[in-house]
Image (cartoon, rainbow, N blue to C red; front, side, top):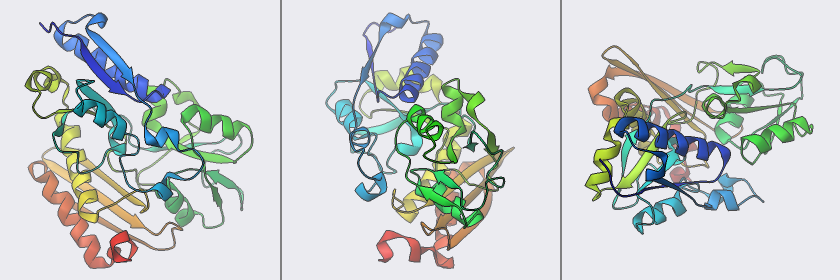
Length: 309
């Protein structure tokens, strides 16, 4: 029985809080603990603060995790809850991923108040998104569409859509489901059409590597199939040294003892792109992601990556 108060670090957006509450709820159920055994501490991150320009211009992953990780290292909190797709592929020294929760729907959601799908949008329609990955794939499917920047949390983006800033937007099905807003999804977009971000739909619990007690407490939360899939995806991203400035997509799926990985790299305008598919045993998840990235580089994908400039 855990005696100390377990302090959970999170961002303050409705989705981030929903994810922190999910982790707390799973810990309560796993260990028979009351809600009073936990304290949720909210941190404003760099990504939350910057609202005047696209995050791709600021650069790098970690914009939504840095301040929470600093609090973790300073021992202000015992664990941090993140959308795993926001995390750097190389974590700060002393920190590690203690558990990965069961993955939600990995697909992107098409949302519009007037049109049923991406294909149904009229020529020249406006799609709002802050994601270069989504922008590139939308432009690749529909070069005639106009893409405009769309920053803010889920509620802010839906409000912009209602205000007529765009005819449609794309959000993660996972976030809408976790917020109880699945009814706002006009249509899920199949991964064969728009491949998701690496680790999309996965929640990571980050801890200090020397905190064996917290590691023991959260170990029961780890969902091994999800952990294996995101391991392959993050290895792919690591090998490509991907950042917010490069549209990169990746998805691993398990079927029995086989792991199937699909990866893509695009130019921001969607005019150029490289894609790869590989299969292998689930036990070689990291190696599969790395070799898939190497194969893309051999095809010429390095011409789209920052280090080639």
